Structures are given as C-alpha cells and as structure tokens.
Amino acid sequence: MSFVIAAPEWVAAAASDLANIGSTLSAANAAAAFPTSTVLAAGADEVSVLIAAMFGGHAQAYQALSVQASAFHAQFVELMTGGAGAYAAAEASNVEQTLLNAINTPTQLLLGRPLIGNGADGATPGAAGGAGGLLYGNGGNGAAGVFGGVAGGPGGSAGLIGNGGAGGVGGAGAAGGTGGNGGWLYGNGGAGGTGGTGIVSTGIGRAGGLGGAGGMAGLFGDGGAGGAGGAGGGGPDAGFGGAGAAGGAGGMAFFGNGGAGGSGGTGGAGSLGAAAGGAGGTGGAVQLVGHGGAGGNGGTEVGGGSSGGGAGGAGGSVGLLGDGGAGGAGGTGVSSDAGGGGNGGIGGLLGGNGGAGGIGGETDYSAGGAGGSGGAARLFGNGGAGGAGGFGPRAGGNGGAGGTAGQFGDGGSGGNAGDGTGSRGLGGIGGVGGSANLFGNGGVGGAGGTSGFEPLAFAGLKGGAGGAGGSAGLIGAGGAGGAGGAGGDASAFLNADGGAGGPGGTGGAAKLLGTGGNGGNGGSGGAAGGGGAPGAGGTAGNGGTRGLLLGAGGATGLPGAPG
Image (cartoon, rainbow, N blue to C red):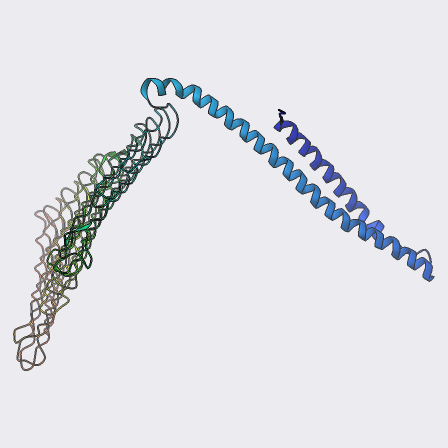
C-alpha cells in the first residue's frame, strides 16, 4: 500500500513562487507589447511595409497567446493555493478533534457529559436533546412528538457558556417541549416547542397541545420564547370543535430580556359549535436588568359557537432596572366575543417604564375585547399606556386603564374604547388615565367609543363615556379627560330619537402644586329617525381641581353638538 504525504506549507510556498513568476512574465510582456507591435517600415516601398506588418501581426498574436497563458497560470496558482488551504484545514481539524477527545474523555466517563461540545439532538420521537458541554457548548434540540399524544422532547441545557436547545413540536394534541436553559454564566434560553394540533375523535374535536415554555437564560442572556399553543381539532367531521391551547410562557432572564410569550392556538371549527382560542403566554420576567418579554397574542375563535377569542398574555415584569413587557393582543372572535388584551408588565424597582397594555380583539359577531391595563412603574418611570378596546357589532370593548407612575414620572394614558360597529352596538368606555405619585403628571383619559345604528323604533344608543384623567403627583398637572363617543343614529323610517353623545371624562385633580386637568368634550348626538328628535350632545367633563397650595383648576370641556 502506498501513502501520499502532503506538506501544506511547501505547497503554499510553491504557489507563492509561481505567482511571483507570473507577475514577472506579465510585466515583461507588457513592456514588450508596444515596441514589438508598432514596428515602423524601413522604407516607403511595398516590401518594407509588408515586412513591418508581418512583425506587428506576429507581436499581436504573441500578446494574445500571452493573455491566455497568464489566465491559465493564475488558475493553476489559485488551485494550488486552495489545495494548500484544504490540506491545512484538514490537519487542523484532526488536531482539534484529537485534542477534544483527550479533554472530553475523562468528564464523559465520570459524568456522562463532555467538557466542550454541543449536545446531540433528540433522535426518537419525544426524546430530549442532549446537554451541552460542561464548559462550552449548546444544548441539543428536542425531538418532535408523533401521532398518539407523544409530547415534544425538551431541549437540552447548556453548561457554563452556551445556548439552550429548542423544545420539540408536540404530537397530535400533545404539548410542545420546554426550551433548554442557557449556560449559567452566559447563554440564551431555548425556544419552547409548538403544541400539537388536536385530533377529531367520535365527532368531537379535541383540544390542542400546550405550547412549551421558553428556557431560562443564564446570568447574561435572553430568555427563550414560549411556543405557540396548538390549534383545536375541527373540520367537517367534527360536531364540536376543540379548544385552542394556551401559548407557553417566555423564559426568565437575569441580565437580559425576558422571552416573548407564545401565541394561543386557534379554536377548532365544528358543524355544531366552535371552541375558544387559547390564551397567549405570559412574557418572561427579568430578575435584575433588562426588559420584560412581550405577552403572546390570544388565539382566534373560528365560527359556529359561543366561545370567543383567547385573552392576550401579560407582559413580563422587571426586578431592578428596565421596562416591563407589553401585553399581548386579544384574539379575534368570529362568532362570539373577542379576547381581551393582556396587561403590561411592571417596570424595574429603581427605574423603568410600565409596559403598554395589549389591544382588545375584534369580532364581526359580538362584543369587542377590552384593552389591557398599562403596567405600573415604581421609582423612576412612566406608567404604561392602556390598550385600545376592540371593535364589535354588539359592543365596543372598553379601553384599558393607564398604568400608575413611579415616584418620579407620569401616569400612562388610558386606552381609547372600541366602537359598536353594528346595529345596537354600544360604544365602549374610555380607559382611565394613570395617576402620578410624587413628581409627575396624570395620564390622559381615553376617548369613548361611537355607538352603532338602531334599526327598530327605539331611541338611538348613547355614546360611550370618555375616561377620567389621572390625578397628578404632589407636584404636577392632572391629566385631561377623554372625549365622549358619538351617539348612535336612529332608524330613518320610524319616529325615533337619536342617541345622546357620551359624556366627556373628568379632568384629573392636582394635589399640592399644579393645575387640574381639563375636562373632556362631550360626544356628538346621533341623527333622528323620521319625525324624532336629534340626539343631545354629550355633557362636558368637569375640569380637575387645583393644587392645594398653588395652581389653577382645569377648564370644563365643551358640550357635544346635537345630532
């Protein structure tokens, strides 16, 4: 047997020498190009001219051949250089693997875990991912489950430095695997696995599987995202659809950001009734410094029932310094109520704003979802804004309340209410503005929602009320009240009165030094039907009271115009 030995450094040196030779030849050819290709005729006779042309043509042919030879030379040098690099990489890989084997063998024998290296992915359905190296390496991904209710495998965790593995997708109707934890010094948590879709059994759709929770981060790193909840079973063979599952919670962090919560699963449709969408997962909390994870969105309810969209998940809160996470949006309700938005997370103890509340879900059939409340701040920071209410044909969702400010900061604004979009749809109520504590202004109240059309011989519906402004801190101004919503119109074919406009919200009060907030304007009245009277404009909101020592009271809002 013969052996071939390659010395990468010799090959690389030879390639360098060849490149230098090529450069020298190219320079020589360039220097000879002009004098050899532009030979002057010795005389004016035809023979001299032909001889000069012959030498010039020979020179041009030589230059063309030189260009081809130079290109071949460059390709040959490139091939040799690439070969030397490949040989060198192979040698380095062999040395690296030999070194890793020497390092990992003792810990593998003693602890069943390598010192350096990534964990193996799960190989069989629902198997867990392998743990990463004790010193360095990522955890392996969990394997997916299979039909028959086998859950997804959990992701493997890292050791000192590395990221956790992702959880596996759940089998039919089974939960997704949890994400692995990041290395305890540095590393991100793994994402949770998606829950499996519910099956249809004996004419009934089964619930989807829960989304897996995101893995916890190390001391430095971000938490893993929660997995989405599985959809409920449904379809033409299902009498009743199965419920969508809740999304997994986001992973926790210490110095870093919390993981986002997973979205809720869609409810399954059925010929006799549908099921509710799943709730969104809670955003991951932060123990020390960072931002809380956003809450997951609620799942959609799919027609034919009286269930509803899933609620949005709450945003993650922060322990020491950072902003709270935003709440997730409420799920859509196709044939029932929509889901409410999730509440915003609380800001850090030393500084940080509260998270915004999630918006309420919308629906084409019933009531819109309420907006989530804004998260509170604690020492330095503003309260989070309340989420807007969702639209709905029977009633608009109420706006979420603004979050309370820290000792130094402003209250969050209240969320605007959703409109009643259909006949007899009531406008929602605007959210209350958040209050301040020591130094800061109160939050503005949210606007009331517009009410819908009244088709029968009844008076139009009253518009939604504006939210009150938040009270000020010891030093600061009160928040303005929200405007009232417009009243609903009456039927044009019957003698019915238009709906009154919604009242404006009261302005927030000042406490010690400061001005009271202005009152909100009243909403406009609805149009009359036939010979009925137009709807009265909404009453104006009163201004907030002045500070005890210094300040002016807030102005009263304007009344709404009649319909």
